[in-house]
Image (tube, rainbow, N blue to C red; front, side):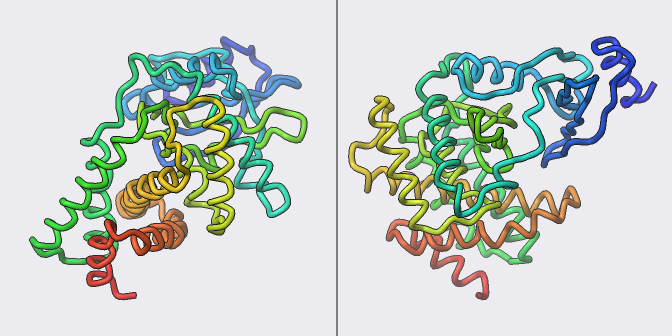
Length: 324
C-alpha cells in the first residue's frame, strides 16, 4: 500500500466513504495540504511524511494557540505514526491574496492584535529557545547558499572573518531583546483571510515556534518577503503595535525609537536567513519560484544596513563583493 492509499484509508475510517479530496497547497518543506470534503463540511488534511517531518510540534503549538483564543485551526483527528492531521479549513484566501491599499491598514492591525494576544497569553514553558547559536547558524545560510552558491562569489579569509564577527554581533544584540512566543513565519502566506465577519487572521504554519526576540514576528509581518510595504506604512504599523503592546504590559522598550532600532536589527538577521533559505530552495530543492522574491528581501537588507553605523561593516563588504 502506497502513502496515498494509506491516507485515503485513514480518511475513510474517520469520515466514511463519501469524501472527496484535492490538493490545497504545498510549502517550502516536505508538507503537503489537501482539501477534504464530506457533504457540506470541508477540512484541511496535512500530509507530513514521518521520515521527513514530525507533526508533534504542530499539535503542541496548535493547543497553545487555541488556549490563547486566537484563530488557530481546530484539530479533528490525527495520526502521529502516519504523519497526518485533519483540521479546520480556513478557506482558500491568504492575506497575500486579498491585501490591497484599501484594506491593508485594517488587516495588518488585526494581525498585530492577534500577535499581541499570542505574546501576552501563551505560556513558553517547556519551549525551546531561539538562542544565539541558532540565530548565528541561520545567518550562515546567507554565506553558504546566497553568496557562494547563488552569487558565485569567492570569499577571502578576511571576508569570512568580517561576516563571522558581524553575525555574532547581530545574534548577541537581538538575543538580548525581551523573550516571548515566536511563530517564526508570521507573514502573508500563513495568515488566512476569514472574511469581514470573522476574526482575522487565521494562523497557520506555526510548528517551528520558539521562545525568542519580541520583534521577530513583527518583522515577519511588516517586512514580508512576498508583499512590499512602503517605509512610512511600516513605521506607522510599528508604532501602532508598540502602543498596543505597551497597554498590554508586554516587555517592550519604553522609547519607540529604541524599539524600532531593535526591530530593524532583528530584520537584518531574518533577511540574511531568508536570502540563504530562498537560494537553497532554488539550488537544492529546484523550487525556483523563490528566486522571484529575493530582490525585495535584498532591498530590505540593503536599506537597513545603510542606515545604522553599527551595520556599515556588512554594507561595506557587500558593496565590495556584489556589483550593483
